[in-house]
Length: 355
Image 1 (cartoon, rainbow, N blue to C red):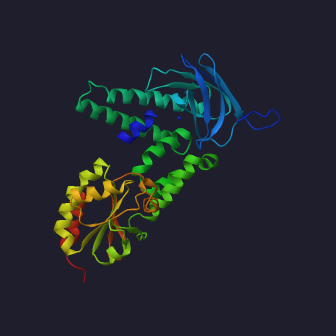
Image 2: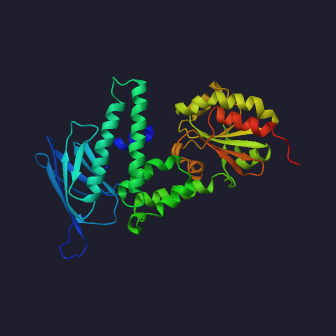
Image 3: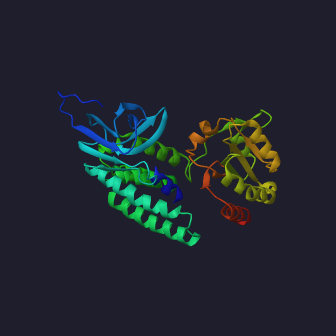
């Protein structure tokens, strides 16, 4: 939910002889100077122009529908930015550098007006949530209200437009991978081809490949001594193995360590193993963390941070993230945190042996 709130806070040249639909963006950002840049869905610069008294214009051919970004830079520093959807027609952008929750009103075309309305309403929730005077109870109320608002919009726009795709993207982290893939298939073909949709599909397919019931993917990384340790060797030596993605700089990860240590102490001698993969980029920080927290189970890393190939193979886009595997190599549970892991291990190690 909080991720969704934060996510909500965040955005071609014209050929007159072409029959392709065209767009014109007329923008005015009060009290700002600099250079305006239009970034396409791949974060490449599609166009640029000077800003004169806050005003600038872009025009070009409409391509595949997706989110673009307009940014104004002054002396190399971004001083204002907003999302925009390139669609046929004249798009009006009214910017306000003083409003950090709603930096621009975008109107003139259907998709932009729908998304701009969503951002304005979301900005109200964000402002209320982060108000210095808000109490814990009030923040809980804001979260519930935002969830209801977002869920209602998702239901109304799913499978129809870019707003629906954006909301689906926000929800995708916690979605069942098959449900995500099924939802993507309900969108028009031109939206399914855009970068946002194709990336979601790739992530969904990767998550499905390491979902409950699937076989683990091999990992072979070095431990703190520089010795390669394969995941399969740890799985073969235990009844159940937890594949745990973490990092020393990740506070939620470190919050899980006491539970992992207690569970390893209780069940390590009975056939419970942990294969920890650190997403650290600092070797010393990784090794010191293991010693400081007495993390005596198997720990490996390539010290490449988020570029770790194992994290990509397991579609890990947030940490802590874990996968519980049985001795046959089948994934039997994912993302067990705190007492959920403890309860699952108690269930597994106290159940009657299979006949």
